[in-house]
Image 1: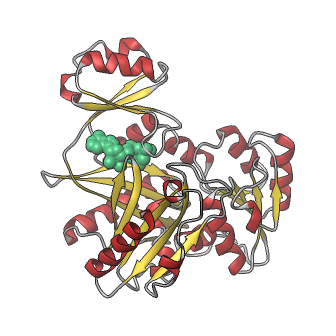
Image 2 (image 1 turned 180 degrees about the vertical axis):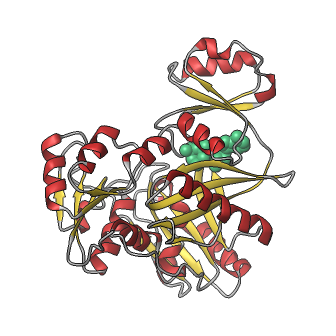
Image 3 (image 1 turned 90 degrees about the vertical axis):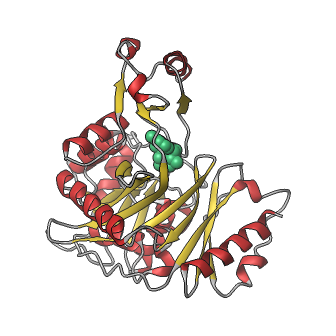
Length: 376
Ligand code: ADP
Ligand code: MG
């Protein structure tokens, strides 16, 4: 595959924080960037060379994007598959529409992962009430999750009895769902893979992820798991990328089970919140890898240069005023990243900071102290 080199124009569907960090990485390498996003105030639009303000299924806008860009990627999985296919017929697109289609639907995703011989939580695909007619006991207590458009714990209901499951299915609008067995988790980890071809694949170091109210709160790197678990997670992530013939950056979330097993929870066909630590703790960030894989270039060295803890900044800490950024900016070990979003809402991802230290314990201690201070 020919390399796409600066100052080529690269396109991205979606103008949120992931698109913004892609645009910043691309521009720092000398590429130019066009963002397609309907939002006038999109975080990526304000740092891109060009912002096409249109819907993701606007054919004229997609034509414009394809004709102006040497390659196009996406920052979110809920792009209409038809839009990606349309772009694919006109320019280079990665990840492929086929890969995005798998990642955007929990039923396809779980079937695909299991079909590749990799472990997932026991589950049942639920398209209609009659799918719930059998014995549900082996999957209870469980979680009913909508097959599409779920994120940050949205579109999920915890269920303990078959009656709960029926009620939850109705409450979720009788949309296609998966009923998943609730597993006892030791911890959660994730692996970001960058893959240009079968020969050119690299994983970033494993991140240990803590959630609060269904939203990622903190990522700790290196993850405090055994070397065996870390190695297996990287192998499974690579095996999945290989099975999908995935080109681009793929995020793989795992459950580490109390009994010692490792199962894949879900995947994202793009950089991931749990990979934001790479911005400051690795020679190349996950966004730099997204640019490189999109351009047919080999992924760069992913070595961890320092233990690091990433803390998400949600809209909750905005009161009448901006949070006291002085607290973070006065700390030499911390690096602040804000996404330039106009309005803060509870649960909205507004930014994050990374704390680097000699040890992961020291980084965690400093990160927790800053987090507490900001919440005051
Ligand atoms: P989202 O798309 O919202 O990230 P996930 O499927 O990753 O959805 O679920 C969000 C969180 O809920 C997980 O990170 C985990 O903490 C918890 N969770 C989800 N499924 C299970 C499960 N089967 N067993 C135990 N915990 C789960
Ligand atoms: Mg998740």
